[in-house]
Image 1 (cartoon, helix red, strand yellow):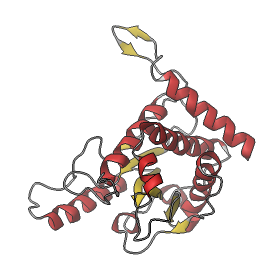
Image 2 (tube, one colour):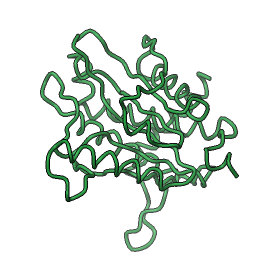
Image 3 (cartoon, helix red, strand yellow):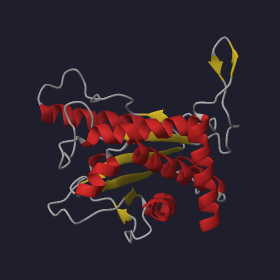
Length: 246
């Protein structure tokens, strides 16, 4: 496990370097550096939590969670693109996905969540990675943790992702993947394979600074990308709800 993990992290790191080395062959058209990985029928959806007026949690230094989430997702999008994988990004800028008819902040949040659920459910054979940041009243807590919905479908990927985050970024992190609380609307109203990753605690001073660092954001993106790549090549992916019903 550890040797395979390190190899995937190395590949992801090399991919990050290769972002600046894609060769243009036709009138400025950049070509993928790596060949598409297998399982082309799988759709990966990346969700940068919150956005727009809904900044999510706020760090001790005043940074909004939404911007950190987006930075990590955009890095993942770059890395995955080098493997011929084109994920669906629910948002690629600092916006809310609410309907124009929503007026109050509450209405916008509700509309945003409904629209995210609809966008996810519209995709077949999908896997969702939702990126968030944690916070707590005490400053002592730190470390990433993975949450999942639909244990049979999502736990194997959640466990692998938790292992990759621990072994690559924080060996002393003893957290285990957990079922998502019922209060998380998005995760409780989708049927595909899905994990929500709390990348760290904005309420911890040291981790707050790391999470705002472009270098650490790249490390997180590389770890999450490596987890997805390894999950696809570890063996047959467990069937999605759509596939199992056929």
